[in-house]
Length: 172
Image (tube, rainbow, N blue to C red; front, top):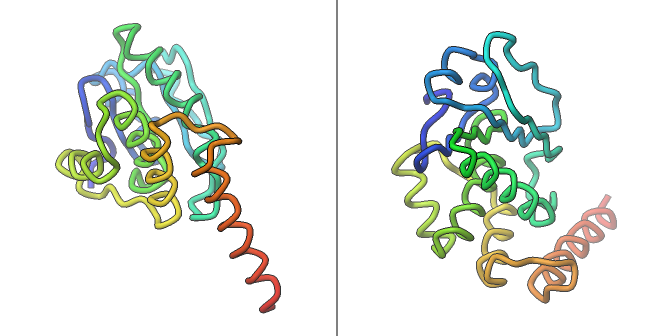
């Protein structure tokens, strides 16, 4: 698996090693980095980064990623509109970061979740969001890529998640 792959012009999807390699970042003109990790990332000193944003998300299906899509999409837009490239990464570049790139493409291209993931896998075969993230991308699609705390699909997803958690706690 590559450290990073270009999904569309200027939008790269990568793993934990990709933001640390100044040579790779320079070759791809990456000046914006979106880290979708719980851990702090050390960036190289030999390459100018204009903006680095970290969204703290664990790779568990019950983690709410929907609430972060708007912020991430704006960050990606800012990077691409500046003429620079943007890297979205997590640890493996397969689940968390792939889900955020998928949400961006769904919003910008009007694609379904499945169309988006198929396209992304043609560029980076390792793309594999966990089941909970797949469900949230489906909610995002059904909400026309506009999710608020009051969106019916979002409320339903949160309720299902909370009920599953309560059931797990009772079984302990």
